[in-house]
Length: 133
Image (tube, rainbow, N blue to C red; front, side, top):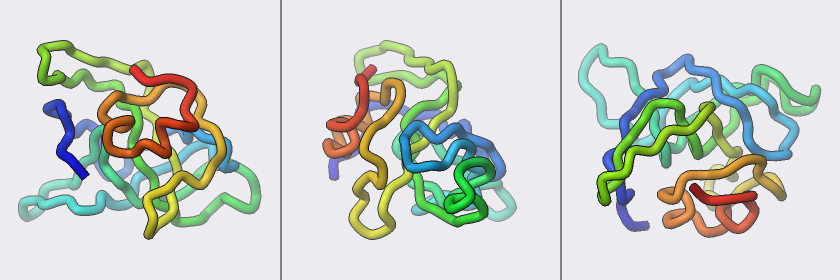
């Protein structure tokens, strides 16, 4: 997997709530942990676009509620800069549920656009999304 082509601001700390952008049955997710986060003592781990996070499903179908799932952050409200100088801002924070080992999406469609950095690194997620920004 190649590196992200932007300097992503990690704007979603542990405890942040995200909307689930797919049709898996979950509606609201809360970040519990950020995977592959190299931190400093007593610093709260934070995630940005392209981060894989462990989440708790707060709202959704009865089968999905109170489950721990892995998700990939596809949109964030905080602005970040791409290598070409463009600043990108989305209107919400959103994530997509993924399978733990294979990094493939659980759902069959994604609502809303996803970041171009996600489309470069995860082509299966880009294939089921409605657009790439």
